[in-house]
Image 1 (cartoon, rainbow, N blue to C red):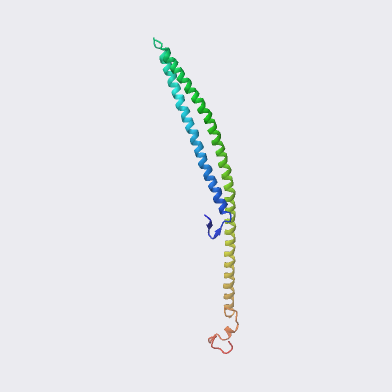
Image 2: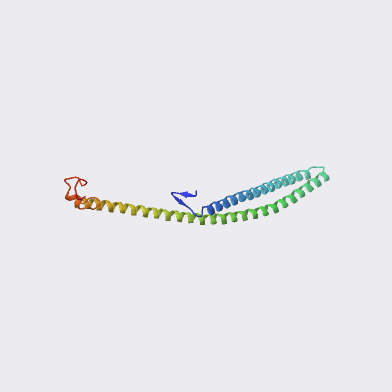
Length: 179
């Protein structure tokens, strides 16, 4: 909002720009947090698959006839899952670092925005104080004028302060010869 109650904030363009920077930083943070969540879900899925493989391997080992090839295949698959999980954990750490950096950037952008918002609030308070002072001066002037008018009427003066008005109050002031 660039104008409020007759005031134009001189730094409105800066405020708008800083707000857009905050909006962009929030968007980036949201994307980074989604990346973190996706990597975490991937790790959870892989960990679950590895557990399933361990359970299957345990079941194979208790059978009376050991199938060495099946055990080796399960072990190989489990090792692949472990390797994939390590890679995902590494990516997760990078994603968490990027999310942390995005969060820090957002905090910095919000601080920058708050500085300009406080300037706008200060300007608005100053403007409101000036308006109140103007209104008070106007009311004082009106009260003074009304007081002077009332005092003049009490002394028999015309509202413009002309004393001759009272001398001829029985006749119209405009019809008298010395007006």
